[in-house]
Image (cartoon, rainbow, N blue to C red):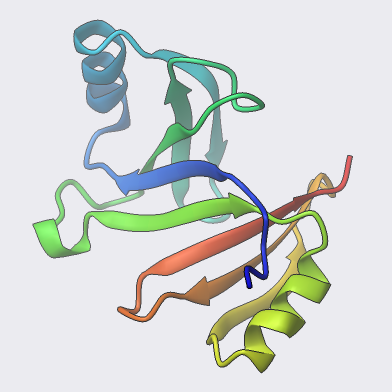
Length: 133
């Protein structure tokens, strides 16, 4: 029995130079920038890129952290994101099934989404996202 009936939203990669990565994925691979942001208080900038709209397809999030210009291959992967229509109930059900919830549900400052994080059996981070608006 499946606890969540969702879809894969995005994959996040840490990049050493955001503009260089955007150029590669858009110019070389034909993706387009869907949205981007700068978050000085968090020390990061990011861009969501893809072949289609986020509402219809899985996209790629590129994130650059201030002061970091390169990553070891083992640390380049960030997380997977999966839609969850009822995040609080999903986390409760997953937790009772033995899944490690590493960050409890919280609403991001913009108030548009609630997120939580879990770990898969290998320790990979998975972000569960509930759209609020």
